[in-house]
Structure formats: structure tokens, C-alpha cells
Amino acid sequence: MTTHPAFAAAHRLAPLPTTRDEATQTVWVRHYTALAMAAHTAFRDAIAVRSTGPRPELGYLMYIANSAAAAAVALIEVSGGAPHRIWDLTPELGSLNGECVDWLAHMLDLCGVNPADIEPLYNAGDFTSPSQPEPVPVTAEDQA
Image (cartoon, rainbow, N blue to C red; front, top):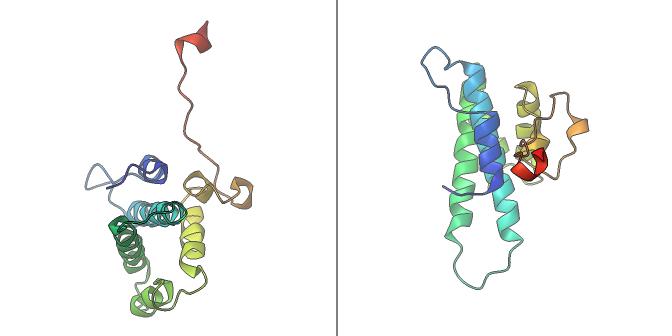
């Protein structure tokens, strides 16, 4: 996996369930939407860096984003609409204008995670979920 800060934020804000009893639909949807948002954020940051060599991480990041978003859709769309929703949210297919990222932001907000805590291009005040930024560690100098 990658060490991009968006993944650390996603795992902190929407961790995997630790027990079978915690493994609810909401917990899984929150986890997979956060993971997909982190992959999109890392992808955006990676393409901003100029490189002359091969960039296999870009493909992996998109696979992570698409797979995690598809998992979230499969958990939500119980009426049989998942195949069309996945098409609409896949960048190479129906999501040509960022619809996937907008959908992920909406779902994260519904699940209680402020998208701005994962994707810094968002403004935390634009969402109803409270922001939970990374806590700043207290050093010995701060306590003196």
C-alpha cells in the first residue's frame, strides 16, 4: 500500500471493524468510501509530480479507488441497481466529470466522516459531519 497521508486519515477515521459484531453495513460503507477517497486523493497528488519513468502506482491507486467504491455500492444498492451505479462511478466508463469523487464525499458525509479530513481540497464547513483532523502530537517543548 502507500504511505500517503490520505490513507492514514482514512484508516484513522473509518477503520476496519475489529469484531464480527462491529461489521455492520454502515461500518463497511464508511471504510470502503474512505479508502476510495484516499486513493483518489493520492492519485491526484501523484499525477501532479512530474516523472519520466513508468508510473505503476497510478494504476494501482485507480484499482484501489474503483474496487473500494464498487464494494461500497454493492453494500448500499440492495435493489439491484449496483451494476449501473458502478458503471456511473467508474472513471473509465460513466464518471467523466468527477461524479465518483462527489458521490464518495456525499457518502462519507452521510456516514459521519468529513471528506475534508481525507481530501484537503474540500472545505470542512461544506459538510454536516464534524471535522476530526489529525491530532497534533504534544512535544516536551510544548509542555514546558
